[in-house]
Image (cartoon, rainbow, N blue to C red; front, side):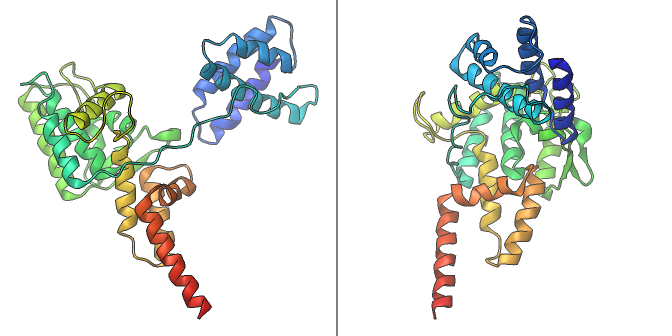
Length: 304
C-alpha cells in the first residue's frame, strides 16, 4: 500500500520536471522497512525508528525530511497517515555560502597554472585549462560542462542537454569562447584524445566533477588565492557566481531593464526560479552597495 502512494507521489514530482531519483530511493527503503511491520499507513514512531538506523546524523535528517514530506502528501488524502513534527532530526540545509568574486587576472592565473597539471604531454592539462575558461565565460554548472558532448557544440552555441531538473537550453557563445573551444578540439586531435565527451582526460572520458573541484582548489592554494586545508575560500562554483554577478553589474540602473535582465539571466543560467537569480543581489557586497545607494537616492527624491 505504501509503495502505491509513493509511486503517485514520485510521479507528481516528475511531472513538475524533477528527477526525484534520490527521494524515490529513500522512500522505497522506508516502505520496505515499514512493510516489514505490516504498516499500511505512515507512523511517526516508525519513521523515527527508521531514521535512527542511518549511518550518520546527516543521512538521518535527509531520511526524516523525505519521509515527512511524503507523509504530508499521504495525510492530505487519508488522515490515517501520521505526520511527524518538523525539525526532529535537525534543520535543513545550511545557509548558502557568500560567493567569492574572482577577478579576471585570477581566472587567467588559474587557467595558466592548469597547464602544469600532470600528466604533462597529454590532453589532461589542456582539458582543465579550457574547462575552467568555459565555466568563467558562460557560468555553466560543472556538472553541465562535464556532461557536454562534442556534438553539443553547434553553430548557434552550446546545447546543454542535461541541465538541472532535466532542463535543456542553448548557451550562446562569444566569438572568443568559440575560438577557444575549437582550439581545444584541435589539441584533442593532436593528442589523439578520443571519446564523445567534449572534455576528456587520457582515459577518453570527462573527469569526475570531484576531481575538477580538487584540481581547482589545489591551484587556487598554490597561487595564494585560498588558505590551507580546512579553511573556506575560493571554490570552483565561484566561477559561476562571478559570471552572474558581473552580468548584473553591467545591467543599466533602470527598474524595467533590470527586470528583463534578471529574467534573461535566469533562463541563461538554467535556474528553476528567478528567485534563485535574485539571490545574487543579496549575497554580493558590491551589488548590495549599489542597491543601498539606489534606494537612498529614491528615498531622497520622494522626500523632496
